[in-house]
Image (cartoon, rainbow, N blue to C red; front, side):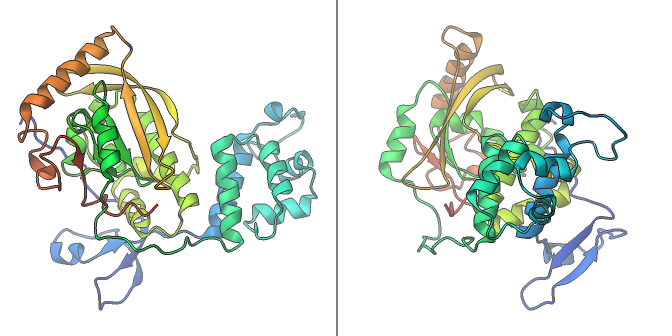
Length: 364
């Protein structure tokens, strides 16, 4: 049926999961192998819980970075039989100018007390990019006890400042939106709402990661879906280092790990990424192919939130198609894309849309 939402089945057979029962019930370890669909009520009462183990996160991250670095790229001879695809621990220790024993301890996840100078040496030895270096320092910060931000009083739902809404509305040539590190879209301009109309429907519910992995239409929206999926997971992995105690982030990762083999495979790669600027291709169901550049700006007044703007090259077919989409959005008013799952969101009928639900409190 045209316009019907196609959902991926949420089933990860045979995968050990930690099950959290509904309030008042016991938490237990279990597996979903052989589980039938005969008890929908029981299934609704359960949720997957994913949590951060700081030490294992550091261990797996450092091991994955060492495994991908070949001796040739590190400037070392590759003679002899090698049992590992990347550097040996002793080689990484030599490049970092630390003892093999100390490096092995660090790689086992013991980052507490490691100096910034040693972390810098390891980052250089493993050829970490800026996002990976920042992730390593975040993991060390957590190991040293700086894991929980100062609690803040927060409203039940996030409300953007009027000045932020005006800034969004001032962008008329392309989609503009505000998102948090969990990839919840918190606010958009009118063109952004039309651009991401399907993201706000189920199963995405305003979350770009959920849309990417749980909605089949994402493979049409992102012509290079594999690359988009890689970037999505890397952004979420980066956020776990920045804010590892974010319960909603844990819940999202648990949901995606259970429902998507593609997500679970990528999550194990421990890639991280800064999403600053670049070029992306899209196929929008109303206007067709778009090639857009984007710029991401950090909101210094609200740490953890990003302001992103997409634009098309002047005079290009993509610019003309964005104009067509903007014209359609202006004429649709209270109809699609505001219809459906996002119709009852606060502010959905206004010129600038603000979202709640899955986004809710940004928890910067």
